[in-house]
Image: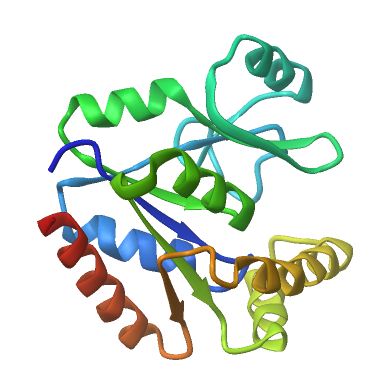
Length: 189
C-alpha cells in the first residue's frame, strides 16, 4: 500500500464520523488526517485531536505560506484545510490516510490525489433525518443547525457524480459493513 487516500464526505449529520471511527478502530493501517480549521472548538473538541484550531488570521498566513494541500472558506471567515505536514506524517509511517471532510473538500482531494484516492459520499436517507441527527447532537444553536441543513441540501446535489461511491446510511450496521468492504477492496489494489 503506497500513499493511498480514503476520503469520506457527507453533509453534517450523515454519519461519516461514526463510520470513519469504526473503520479506524478495525484497521491499524489506516490513520485519520486531522484537518485544520479557523472555527471555534465544539463541545469537548481539542486542538490536535479532532482538528488543528487556528484563528482566521493564522489560517490566512498559512495559506500564504503554501502549508495546505487544499483549503476552503466554508462560511465567511470559517476556513478548513488539509495540512501538507499531516499528509507527509501519515505516509511516512506507511499508512493510508483517512479523511473525514466536507463535500467540497472531498471533491478537491479526489481531484488532487486521483487514482491514489477512494472517495465515498455518505448520504442520510433524507434532509429531515439530517436535521433530527443535528438536533440530537446538542452541540449547535438552532441557527447553526438551519444553516447546516440548507448547506446539506445543496451538498447532496453538488456531490452527484463526483464521488467514486455513494453509501446511504439508513442502517448504521449495514453502512459500516459496506464501508469495510469498500476499504478492503481499495487497499488490495
